[in-house]
Length: 390
Image (cartoon, rainbow, N blue to C red; front, side):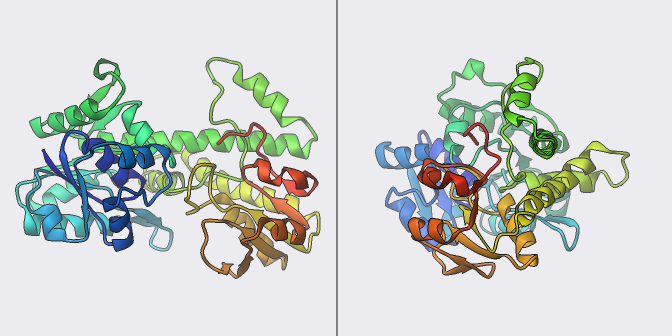
């Protein structure tokens, strides 16, 4: 098939690489630097499998900044543009999806449109009515930053918010391109609203699990109990399981903060306790971590990495930024070591590119995730990373 993918972040680029194994794929983005890298078989994002596939596989993949070229001849157009929760308007910002659909219908009124961007409940149905165009399908992604292509090659499940023939074709394209055997992949077809709910409830459950173990850790640290022993004892119960249990400064990244807030917004007329608590717990955890540092009365605190986890280059909504803001408000000098940053300051804090100078200038170093390169100054480190994983 001729397929277009709009947006070349983790979701879009992993989808473009996956499908270009067996289809003609054209990736569209407004960032010409990203486009040039992709056309030169270089990944613009940090993802091991994407890097390997671009370099070594014979992919039928081209990237462009030309909308007409991207949309006009494609049978299938996948939207993977960023959406976010706007805390000012208290609503999800879906303007990027809206804009892309307008452009698609300008150049191509026959394509099947697949939305991979995260959207509010009921939004697909709203778009179909707004544009009088039935061929709009929502299919949520379940990817981790830094291993997005791997998660597409070995999908936990494929959810498609439609039962039409076009929806079934899309499901078969994803299954065929995966390395996981097709008979081992669960492909579920449902209504668009049900698919939207699957996405938001899945991510909110993961946020709840992170919040739970963070609160367990807050209790143990306050009462001088070994958190590691407690978590190991709890998680040996097979009903609980040994995953998503490494304490952190809070959940963050592309998905969990906005998806939990959006789901809570959908509960305005529905009784709830847990969903609101999941959202509020993240603020409580950041307050707790910040206060642990503030109580030590340091003059200079070093932030070791803004990224959420190892193997990622994303620091959007990273929990450590919330810690920084709280310490800044108390007049504590903040310095940052983040190799992915190409600027001298970040939120009025000095960025130091030399790790040794950073270590020397920092009185305390806080690290959401520990790394061997700061092991020599372990006596300065404050971290809640107990198991050395993400």
